[in-house]
Image (cartoon, rainbow, N blue to C red; front, side, top):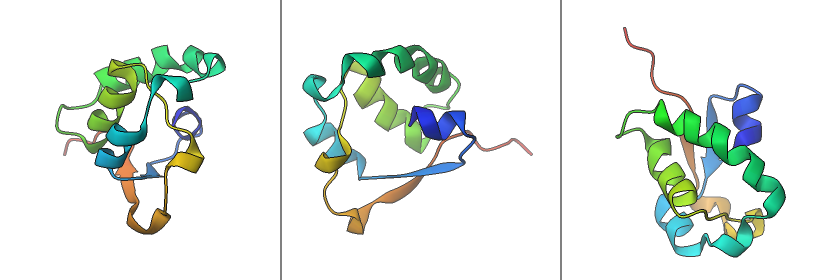
Length: 89
């Protein structure tokens, strides 16, 4: 997710949030990934509570969990999650 944000992506394909909640764990958050936590927390703080990405970040950041890509499962039911708030008109 950090790479997508750094490169200016608008969306990221992710497994359903329920799957992330079920499979993410602390053992899948390697120490080298910890350095990205502050930037992700800052990004999360700028999202509205009801933003689709907020729930994912709450799982991963709130409990210091990670999810390796091979644990995502089939891409058949992945969703395109917007990474940024919608601009206000």
